[in-house]
Length: 163
Image 1 (cartoon, rainbow, N blue to C red):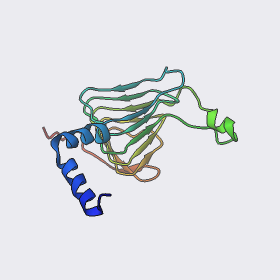
Image 2 (spheres, helix red, strand yellow):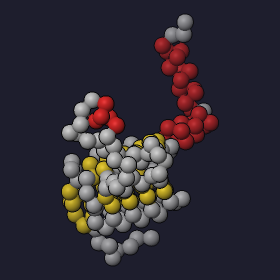
Image 3 (cartoon, one colour):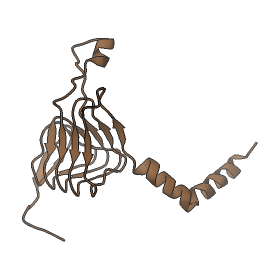
Image 4 (cartoon, one colour):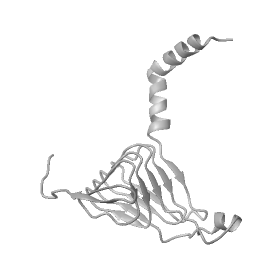
């Protein structure tokens, strides 16, 4: 039997290994989790230069598009799926619309860690969704939103550019 101290030391050595760190970063921190629609009709389109980290994408009731230079913090949820609260038991579990709840995250939008985006909605260009917020409607371009449900906190100056 290995002692607690020996186990902790072994774990520290394993996690300090560069290959282990790369594995954890790629598999745990940078891989999205995708729930596809039952019929496979809904799609996930992520621009090659967008960064979604370990976001969860639910495509049950619509498609999701993430445009150029959009980026996410960790544990972001992008949910097209919904259930009918007026139904009960098994019917509540299976009464899911197949389409119509699409989500688009426009160019340069920043979705902070822990935010939840519930479709249908569009997050405008260069908008910012604060950490832990729940978006239930469209967010205008250059808006900073936060809260549950998310509301506009301020508007960014779309004319100011820092390259």
